[in-house]
Length: 273
Image (tube, rainbow, N blue to C red; front, side, top):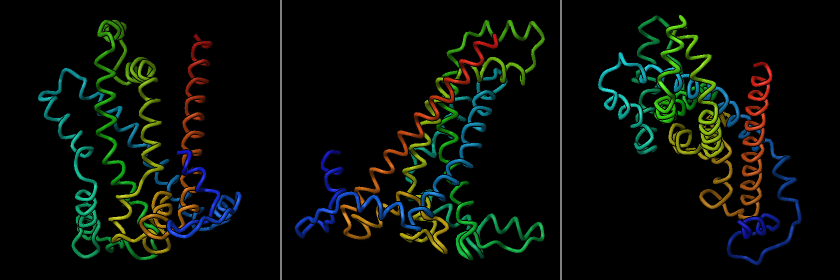
């Protein structure tokens, strides 16, 4: 980490002598429209994806925690499978699903009389949709398993008392389950946010291994931008190190903001009681 910070102040191709630039790499990075495009794409994909990732994971876990569901271990294995499956293999499958001529999604659009959509091409506007679907599919099962473990730690007497008092499932879910799971929700939120900033394989494979994220940089993410500078794409090691440190700082700031917001809401809830 220290050597990376040191290199970020130099222009270095990995072989030639290093040339000191001061903070020029950081200034050039902020002024680079392609970096801002990658940042915007990453944040948009991450923020929209978190709706199904968190909300869907919570609902699925609540259903799985119900006594009505049988073969829970089978369902847990199915939902957890995306996390242990190769991202490259999954990306190739999703690339086929989003194919223009023979993709499954365009099969349904044709079935309903809608013209086929160029998900991974065209002007690049739909690439982010494809990445959001794939990113959500990957993380929702992981969060569901973690939430389910948290729910199974909640004393069943609380649920039974709420049921006797006449509370329905929606009320129990909103007033009991979610408040008691706040520390776990915070953990998963920070973890999936880190996954958001490190998003690379899915958009890279979906855009046919394009370092620029496909048409109009529609699928370009921060990690793709970084690796395109060095070491995979180019040899701008100093510039890539500066980019890595900016991403690290954003992750830290994001985590602190999320933690503070959760603590603030919890504090308000306690005062309300």
